[in-house]
Image (cartoon, rainbow, N blue to C red; front, side):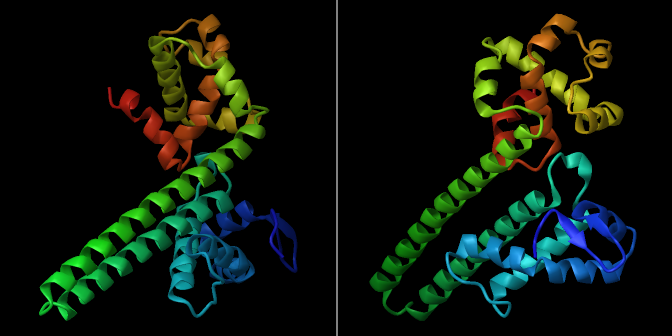
Length: 248
């Protein structure tokens, strides 16, 4: 049974605690976790493929490898749970696999029908359109999943999207300053740990590190926290929003 707690014969521990032990070399525990979370893997893969997934399916194997990779790469400092991180990685890998399969099929069809030039051209166009439509649809689904995961993370800090909209800096310069404060926080290991553990902004410490007044930091506190959480996690689409500012 899936849940936030992973059961063993000896003791009860969180999944993240199990992952920490696995990263230290506990291969037996790795096998136990993977076996316990196969239904989660199948469900994540199925949400992309839109059909029931069997363990013998190639897509399941892709998801299994992605789940194993997520265990190796996971860090609590990302600001999200292991399952949230795993789900995003699994879906991306499966989507990439389907795209490659579609492209390979399109190439095979092209070669097979090469003597029928008009038919071949039509097949290529149809396949290219199908791949592009699938890409748009898959990206939209991933974006929705990402926003949903971010909402859950915000809730653990007693924040919501409505509050962010209401409390976002109105002027471009103010938003840029808030984002830069968040980046300064994320780049400092101790401050980032404080945010994750206390669920509060270390305003006093930040004040000494940035050219922004304490009053301004306090006024934009919720927005700064939200941006720091985005920067600390694997939110591809949400980070696009920040890309322009971070590259300046």
